[in-house]
Image (cartoon, rainbow, N blue to C red; front, side, top):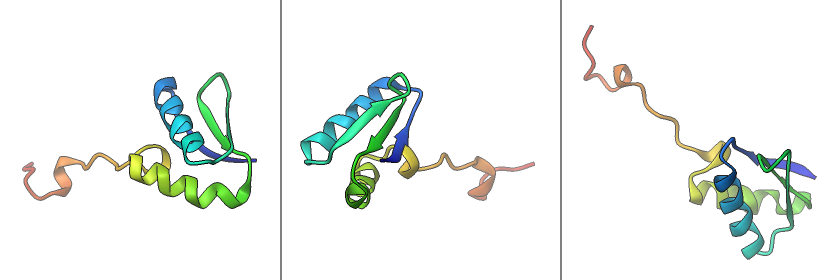
Length: 74
């Protein structure tokens, strides 16, 4: 088993779980509904791509700090 995704938002975990199961990827929700584990290592890449498409987990796009875009003044 390999950890794919974790979140404090159970609904988000359940959304990813549902998408993975629908794609034929065996997975398991653990840690009181906050972590999603992939059962087979060979499915990890496909599951990661799916997370990227959903924009969740480790693939979540970081919030850009306003001072990094050049518009912020001191």
